[in-house]
Image (cartoon, rainbow, N blue to C red):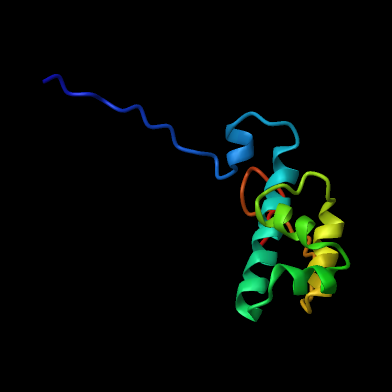
Length: 106
């Protein structure tokens, strides 16, 4: 039986950029914010319906966001959802420690 070799390519840390999608950095930020929304819902044990009421949208839209369908939402709107869920959102601007400055959600 012949051995197979696998080619491994290290990712950039942004799957959207690795896939060659336009606006990859913005998509990564939105994904990070959607993950934070998911984390809040899980920690608070909120149903999608309860979260939708707090966020001012309907339940199918919460479901879509949690499923990664957040292209129709701006970064600002996703941040406002987190505020509606009782979280502070802080934007920090600082000199970059790396050669490739960028956006990220911590």
